[in-house]
Length: 399
Ligand code: GAL
Image (cartoon, rainbow, N blue to C red; front, top):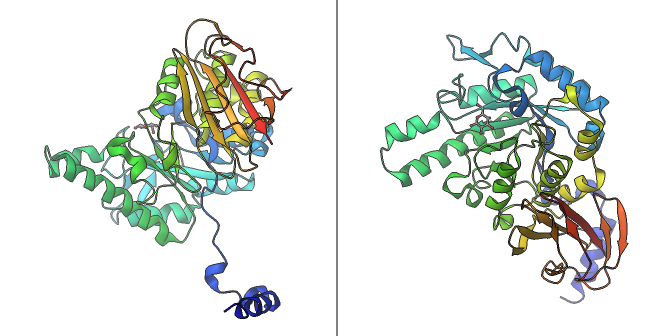
């Protein structure tokens, strides 16, 4: 055996690449890092049109968002028309030419996403995919769709009708419905990112990957205010272990730039989502981008944390009152570290300390304040921090 190993090694080295067994030529993982892009719902909701989506694609390019990694342009609910006599779904008058739109979006170096659900109707009461899963998946593939958000909504009626009061059976129905659309997508042969949207029911993080999900919503809908963002961040405590390359927890789309969020709140929202290795789907009105909002959305160092190839989501390592500390290990052996003041008053952290050891920070690591774009050198637990209400200190520690 001892002699055989070097002999085999020598043989392997001398083989041309093409002679390697097929299993060794691994297929790229879909959504190897959390998907990034823009989605129409948070800003346009039911009013979105084909022209809005085209304009969004243009603005993603001209604002520098595409080059920062935002590539999926996702149409949410309300694009659907009616089925014809053969069951083929048509778009409604707001989306006269989906194939043309996909071609346009692709010509910009972007990808196009779409929305449906396992019920007869979507949340906004448009046609959904029940009984037409393969037909719809084939249609998406023929248009050149790259991403599907599949929203439970209308299917709840069927769950109640077919298994009244039987939660276990209803949960199984839900899993089967998601698996069914996944199989249909796979059968098209087109790589289509599969986003499960069922608000975290039945602890979806435990089975989302098994039914083919590349991401799954962990909570109810995000809203454009800080309490909603804080609630969602807190609802993701303990879920980190379920996420990884190809299968992510989705704390919902970004509200950065929406509502009355302050700069600190926008940064905390974006920074927290990066810590959570969350899909980064901007949900704002791109026609009204300010330099401040663009700056938050395209901060390369924050995005690098989100997109870190190790794919390890942050966990909360410490809490004291409204102050929380989260950390995640990074592919280069460093650590992303966040300390957040979820409270309403300014907080001095002298008394709390940074809890670097619990956060996995090794002595001697070099710290960089990410939002402040400032090297801090080697900092210790007694490093003095002041956080305004809803402010975060985001630090990247490197070896
Ligand atoms: C909700 C979903 C939202 C949006 C909306 C569209 O169920 O959580 O993100 O997709 O439906 O009707």
